Length: 482
Ligand code: GLU
Image (cartoon, rainbow, N blue to C red; front, top):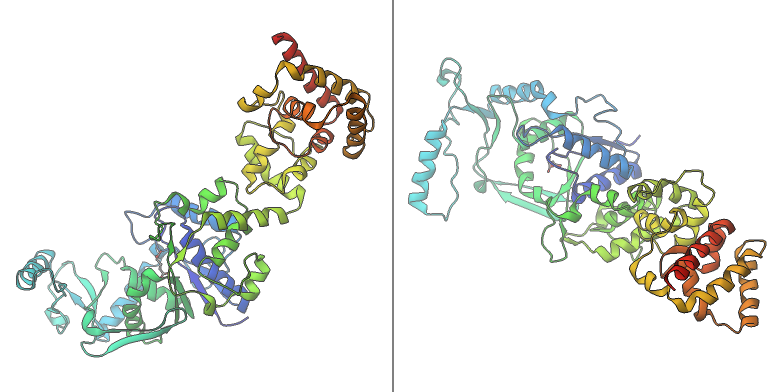
């Protein structure tokens, strides 16, 4: 087991965004590649916005994508618990120790005092320079603390001079002067840590060696490094991943429809397709576009991650997705497509002998499992739905060829593609017909649609009894109309 320990630390405040899924994926790939450990930690300290349903949505999305974690909720581990809200005594202990060691301090400034100082600052500087906490309590000691239960916050003593930087595995060297920082609030007296403090305490306690997350967190990293040092430890490595941009090159937000993993699942994407696309969104490995999970593990490296925003491209996603769908064995596609058929009101028995052959006729044209369900619909629906465009093609002029085709079909054995095709060719010649004279009418009679896979493939899957019944129904309809 290598010593690599990485984590995914989502806040459960909505569904899992594809940016979050990609962060999880890169961490997971790195753990798999290095034989390291992938940890899931739920950062639920935002009590107002965190919900059970969001936690469940994160689990469901990761389960669906097949991104399993080695330590975390459900599986446990030596450094648990893995929900921040269950770790409050740990934060308290670290905060108190920092105060004892003089690296942090209790600040009893009230909101009213701070608001007044902020207003005074604004009067003096306008909106030009941001307000910073003036350090009123920085050099005070326990003797100065008010008696009784007066609320306070823990603040970090940030050095006034110097700078803090790191060599980001993706972005290169980044450095921020301490003048730009202020004495950060680590925790309030209610014991709920602020993000930077909770995150660092947990990364430290969980032995994290590399923090990989979205580059919206670059701004937090200098403070986190200072907290690591205050806690007496060296910060881990950092990799900040480029944001995913929508088609207008704007940051894709949680509100974006295409932003949630759940949406892709509902649309009938297969997990390997979405994973492959997300892996390539912001990471490149030569021209290789279509990669299996194993290939991703083998090739993934931080050096291939781009510095700048990665553009989401629905067309490329569809291409990658379709490729992965087509790689799946027919019986696996069939089983996965059943819920999508059910959503169309079609209950197909999993052992229906038409199922896998039907899927085989459409798999090359489908992009999603929902497409598969749509494309095989008429094989199972009695009677097949007749679409409007198709209905127009069942005109009185096709009655004669339909009757003749019906007679030919009724007498034909074996009912399989090649043999049917040969027989139909002979019949066309004998009757002096061309494909155009009858094929579209037969297609519509059998499927209710104007476009299907090859007619003889469709006939073989439907079987003789159904073909005859459907031809009869179309003939009867035309006769009734005529
Ligand atoms: N809870 C933070 C988020 O969801 C985690 C950031 C991090 O990975 O440090 O953005």
